[in-house]
Amino acid sequence: MIIFDTPESMRDWSLTQRAAGRSVGFVPTMGALHEGHGSLMKIAVERDDITVLSIFVNPTQFAPHEDLDQYPRTWETDLAMAQEIGIDAIYAPKPATMYPEGYSTYLEVEGLSKGLCSRTRPHFFRGVATVVTKLFCAVMPHNAYFGQKDAQQCAIITRMARDLDLGVNIVECPLIREDDGLAMSSRNRYLNAAEREQGLCLSQSLFTALELLQSGERNVDAIINHVQNGMARVHIDYIELVDALTMEPVTTIDKPIVLAVAAKIGETRLIDNIKFDPAKVPAATLTTGVV
Image (cartoon, helix red, strand yellow):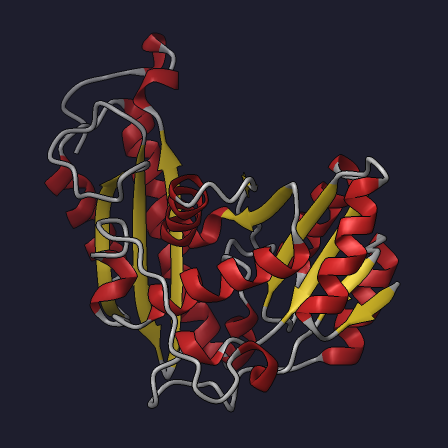
C-alpha cells in the first residue's frame, strides 16, 4: 500500500494506472474509519482494478464553533483497516497543501445545497464540494464511492460531477448500521451510554415511518408528525421528506423520496435517513388510512 501526500505524486501514479488500462476506484474519507467506510472500500476493491482511499479532515466544512480540533484522528488503525481490505493507495494531503496561503477558490452547487443540513451548517456543502473536486483532480478516479447516510451530500456530489463534466461515476452505497440500528458515524464515539440510548430514537422512528409508508400511508404531515413524536426526547434539528433527486420538500409521495432527520444528542449532532420508492411497493401490501 502506497501513501501519497501531494496532488502531483497522487495524480502521476493514477495516470500510470489509467494508462495501463486499470480502473481506479476512490473512497474519500476524513479518517476515523468504521465499518461503514469499510463497506465502501470493500465495494470499491471488488469493482475496480485499483482502489484509492483518502484521509483528510477538511477544515473548510467546519465552522469556527464546530469540532475540527476534536474530530477523531486514528491514523494507525485507519491504515490497518485499509491494508486488510486491500486498498492500493492512500492519499493523505496536509491542510497547507490543500489550502495554501492565498487560496481563494470555492465551489457551490445551487439548489441542492439549500435546506436540510445547510440550514444549521450553511458553510458545510461549499467545503464539501470544494474538497471533493480537489480530491478528484488529484486521484483522477473512474468511480467514487459515497454512503447513503449523507444523502444530501451524495446528491450534491452527483450533480457537481455531472455539471462540471468531471468524468467520475458517483456510486451511492447502502447505509450501514450498528447492531442496535444506529447509523454508523465517526461521531458515534462521542456519545456516552445514555446518549447512545437516546440516539436510537432516530433510527427507530425512521423504521416505523418506513413501515407506515410500506403499508400505504402517503400523507406527508402524518409521516413527519410520527417521526417527530418518536424523537421527542432529543433536540431536533430537522425532519424532512424530500425528493430523492432534488432534495426539495415534497407535498405528495408519488416518487422516490428521502425521509431525513438530524438531531443533537448532548453535544453530538447525528443524521440519519431512509429512502422509499412508492413504485417499488407491491400493490398487495398497500392499505389506506394508515395513521
